Image (tube, rainbow, N blue to C red; front, side, top):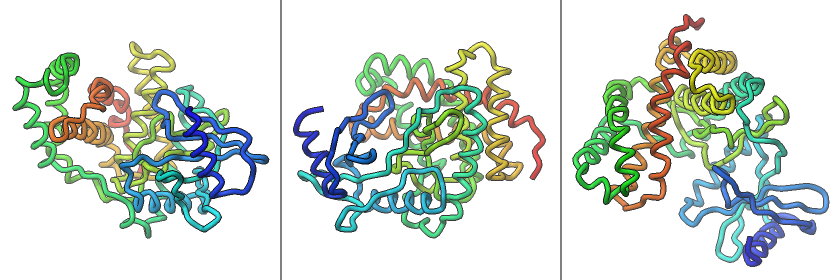
Length: 340
C-alpha cells in the first residue's frame, strides 16, 4: 500500500472517529476486494471501504442503509457506521469512503461441518431480507429475459470468426470447447424465465469469500454492494451452487458425484427450513442456478461486444465449468419429494 493511499484511508477514518489510528492494512487476495482496508484504532477494529469511481453513490447509500436495516433486525451483517456529520459516505481526496463494523472470522472453507450452518444462515438471511421489503424500490433489479439472452447469445454466435480478436486466442479456444454447454443452457432456459418468481431484496453473490465463519458458525455475510432485487429461489440456488462447489473442491470430490449430490441436498434442506420454497421452485433449482450463472456469462459477452471490455473474460472458464457441475450438485434435490 502506498503512502498516499494510507494517508487517504487515515483521513477518511478521521471523518468517522476521533480515535487515533494504530494501523491501516489493505486487504488483498483472490476474490477479495482490494478497496477494503482494516483500520485498527485505540480500542477496536473497523472495515473502511473505498468506493470505485464507477459506483453509483446514491445506490451505495441505499445498499448501506438496507444493510443497516438488516443489522438492526439482528441479522449477521456488519453494521453501517455514520460519520461525525451524520453521513454514510465521506469524501477524502476526491474519493468516497464508508465505514463498517469489523467482523472477525475466516472465509467459508468448504468443510463439511460448515455446510449445514451455511444453508441455515442463507435461508434465514433470505427470510429477513423479504421482511425488509419496504426498501424494495430503492435497490436495483436484476434482469432475466429470454429476449436479452437470445440477442446476446446470437451476437456471439454470429461473431465466431472474430472470437480470437474479441476474446483472444485462449478465450476463443475456451468458447469453442464450451459452446455446446452454453448452447444447451441457453435453450433450456428459454422457456423458464417467466417462472423465476417474484423478486425481493437478496444478497446476490453468496460465494465463499462473502461468508465469514467462527468455527462452524456464520459470523457475517459481507459485501453490501451485492444487495439487489432478485427472485429469492434464484438467490438460494446460486448460493447452494457456489458453496457446495467449494465443499467439493476442498474435499477433492471431482470423482465422487454421490457425495457432492448428498451435500447439495443437505444444503438445500437446511435452507428451506428457514425459507420455505414452493415444490415447483425446488424442482427447478438446477435451472435457477443456471439462470444466474448464465446471466453472468451474458454480462461478459455484453462487455466484450459492446464496450471492448475484456477484464472479466478470464472467468468464462469458471462459469462454463459451473454450468456442467450444477446438475450433479442438485441431482438429489430435484429428485426429492418435498413437504410444502
